[in-house]
Image (cartoon, rainbow, N blue to C red; front, side, top):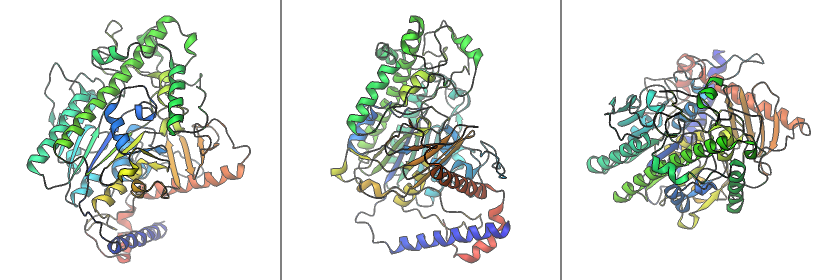
Length: 564
């Protein structure tokens, strides 16, 4: 085993050193200045929720970024919050770094470390890697990565954790620079995240104007509980009374017209409810709640009103997030840094079909969307939020993994390309290598006095920013979560719900996964399954305890020492 892993390390190092030497031979850029980087991550946002992706929710600031930048139509995440954050910040599939599990079977053991384990020491986060390149880093919002932000390269952090994720109006569990957030009667998590992000930029201009920055703004919106200021809810109260089928059809029509998707829309899966059953929650929430996406006309008037109100709150949360994005953009403009800041917006997973009650519980007498209420979007509106795709958060069908993906960088995106679409596949593991490349930060073959660092599994998508015809380096994308699994090679994708056989889809003509081709193309299924198993084994090899230290002597002999 040691010899096998040693050969893997040596092979990796040869590739990394070759790439490292190749970068030294590239001609210098005309503008050597490195971009600032702002990554904005939404929580449980559906593919079709933004106006720029076919939604009817008012998101003028994110739509502005889309008009002035690029919209990617084939972008994906990991289907769940904590694996997506690990993937984004490290450039590795979370299963390779102990941040998600692999199913056992076929003689292959499950992944060491568990679903939310501790990353190996070589799996450094972006802010730590960028610090060696002279960047300062700021974090505002949800964390959900092992370890503390301030101990892993971030210079400042507002961390929404614990009870802070169970109530948008309660600062309990929220820390600012490692200290408890002050209590106030007007606290709202989305606003607090925006406040901190703007404050970090303001102070950066004053104290570090000549230093590039990396800013990670991770909103908790629109994750449950559905809670928003009353005025925002009132604005949308009448907009969703026509039901999820009508909203879904309208979104799909706008997507088709904009070229965001092509092909048919999936059927709503009427029997597919929340991923985790909580029957006691249905009793607490009352007769207005339903745990299946039934035909809207079959719902009672009480159920229709209850469901329409939930979507109104969801929309208000999305608009509140967009307002904070607008404040951050205003601050960048005031700093005269908007043009040289690479901005990426995405979501950590698709919209959620979950229905549960947490935190302070749910008071049926409290106004919906207030602090005393605890509501979830549920499978009906989640089906609309994820238009035109199947399934929801936690599943690795397109509804669980597809994300809006907006890139805005006036200095890096040619003026004539503004507003264009990019149809090449990208994955959250591609963010870290892209940022590292553009920041001029080199990933060394290994750290001095530290463990061997394998090359990232992600691939830089920087070439796509200036050239729509550029070939994507992501020929293969891979997923696994809670036994659900999928792999995409080119336009062919196999996907399986836990315990079920593979289904095969041709995403070039059927991105919504409406037609299963497995029975007609068994050889394609077999070929893609071998690819899924290969990547799963690669993740197991990376995640194996202490192998990097074991083979460090052989690895060191294969390549020169390079400082980070």
